[in-house]
Length: 156
Image (tube, rainbow, N blue to C red; front, side, top):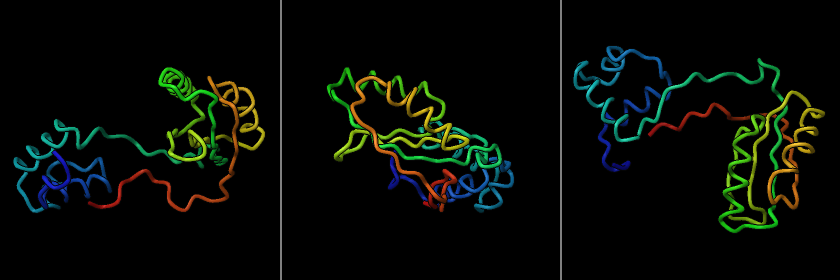
């Protein structure tokens, strides 16, 4: 199933859940204009087909004191599949790395790193990121302000 297979009710379910993942099925049905039973059937189908992959709480990292965000360009010395797999597995074990993306660019990966302070970031960079498998160079960009960072998808 892809986007073109979704009708207006499926799209509306996704929009409403994107705003409020804790909404009851009865309230969801009311919002999209269907009865509870067909809404629940559609919801289960969207989950079974992998369109809806889960539900989670969105936590404000700033309120937890994690307001230092850095983006790190990473260049690898080896980009063969085995090296990439080893790097990917090692990145997954570093909790300060919030996101990691393989890039088609002059560098190989872009990491989003969240810490409490610049000194905490320097420690993560020096002790964890720089020692990841096959890292040959890094460049850091510090975010001054998050303009959009809620993790929600735009309405479909």
